[in-house]
Image (tube, rainbow, N blue to C red; front, side, top):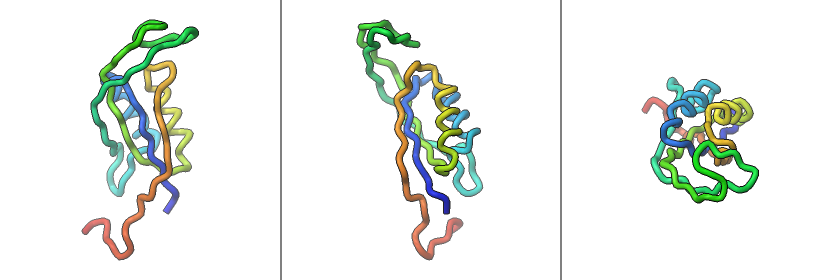
Length: 115
């Protein structure tokens, strides 16, 4: 099995669908006979744009709170650049907050995926 990674990205709630669609189209979230698999949770993003920023929301020097969605999806490590480029292209923020990390998505020995 190819090494797998997980993407976690924070997105303004109104843009979450577009980001999920973009990363799914790039190959994230493929599990067995399913595509575009992801998990989302709602929360509040907080940030203060610094001088030199061009914020999509808020103003330089002013603290901001925004309803955001945390989107998580796994993907084959070989698709990292494609998945990240898709996510960043669909994301409205100048500097999106995201992280990636390796995961173990292998099934236990002797298990059946259709059981």
